[in-house]
Image (cartoon, rainbow, N blue to C red; front, side):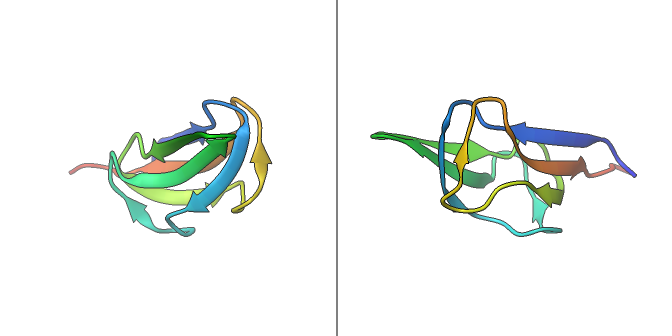
Length: 78
């Protein structure tokens, strides 16, 4: 098993859209979520290249700052 990285919400809001599924491979910088709060919108990008191990939220779900949104297992090189 590789190292696990938790993707967290930078602010309180609502998950507007999820762009991946469980077990998908994601690349560093790839769009994972759109988070909205009032008129403010933020795209949350993958900080690492790896495989999605867990998705902790659903579209339309409210979240708080610091809440874990997903977990990504880092891809092992070599």
